[in-house]
Length: 298
Ligand SMILES: *[C@@H]1O[C@H](CO)[C@@H](O)[C@H](O)[C@H]1NC(C)=O
Ligand SMILES: *[C@@H]1O[C@H](CO)[C@@H](O)[C@H](O)[C@H]1NC(C)=O
Ligand SMILES: *[C@@H]1O[C@H](CO)[C@@H](O)[C@H](O)[C@H]1NC(C)=O
Image 1 (tube, rainbow, N blue to C red):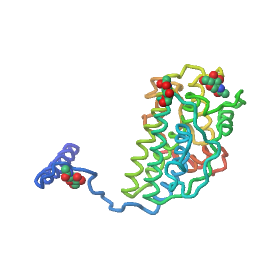
Image 2 (spheres, rainbow, N blue to C red):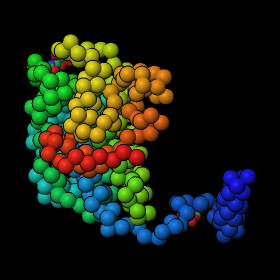
Image 3 (cartoon, helix red, strand yellow):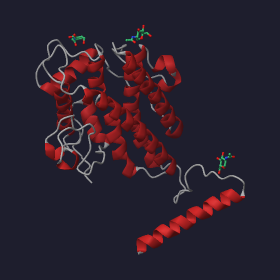
């Protein structure tokens, strides 16, 4: 009953808004309703949003270089704010469809950098190591032995997708993790917009890998699914906060509703996106385990 009253009052409120708009000759309501707390950005929002720039810069350079052979310095140099160019990034040997998708992702990251920097100010581009050697080391860590020949993310579409597999995902979990601590209505709007696109990028990459899940990644006798599982396991191990990163094939209890072992989207037991706080993200990104062990578990 209480719910019905609540629903009806919301309905009347909306009707009132619509009719007052109609009487002014403009039928369309655009934009959100006024915020309850009319503070656009809290001081405490700034660090959380600026932290995301580390991930956004990484994605931006990896995607732009992968698709085009050049990065932010050629596309929107001001956004680098004088930070050094990435080490070892280069054009990947991609099929045409994937190349277009990755090019779009790269431009989207330029937009994300602009949105964050123009809303809460920015940090210069950090020094990024996007060399094949660095990715090879990550893959060796994931498998616990040296892949021979070393993994090269730029060699072909499948390798590039595997290298990309965790990049928007890191942004996704970081944004979910930042959400409870953001308070300003402008900050929250920004975060919602960033999260939506990072999640979409992650889903597209996973869907392309899912289609080839059972294929070997040449020249290795290792399937695409095994790669994703090992990379996700490594991240869970580094972050030290339980399972928050799932590959394309999972034990059934980790699948949606505990009913399925294929896992095109990585999500928790209620199929909500996992969250990571900055300390967890740093432990994963630097692979060092040096960050103090703090986790967020709601
Ligand atoms: C109607 O009003 C909204 C603001 O309430 C405005 O953003 C929108 O552009 C207007 N639409 C037209 C067609 O004038
Ligand atoms: C891919 O694009 C290049 C350059 O536009 C073109 O020469 C080539 O034929 C395309 N390949 C396929 C398989 O469509
Ligand atoms: C590079 O890609 C080609 C074509 O997919 C593959 O045959 C070759 O084994 C790959 N080499 C490495 C080191 O990934």
